[in-house]
Image (cartoon, rainbow, N blue to C red; front, side, top):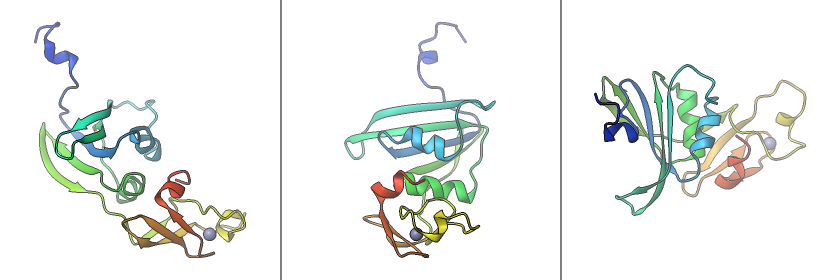
Length: 158
Ligand SMILES: [Zn+2]
């Protein structure tokens, strides 16, 4: 391929890995941080922010991560950061599987309770746990102190 080929200016298709699409615009970096990815890894990460989404005529972010798989826990994290995100699993340049993330009914060890006096925020070895109260609008409830967090509130507690 020519060095100055126009296609090299675009973000290339990935061979194997994950494309996280339809991320709420502005949340791509939060998705990466919740996955523990900071760029110090040995795989390539492409971030596209404020891409026009033709389907819904709005803006979205896209994250492409090469040579990476996502665990169930990581998918749960993404679902809480951006509930409408879609996951494309890429194998040999083809989409092998595509699905929308799903918010789990029980959210364990992902979100911290916003109540400072909650037992899950004390030194005792208690893992923060929430139940899903409502998908849309997103609302979760702490099983220990009953505090509820909205999507905006929990976003800063992931
Ligand atoms: Zn609590």
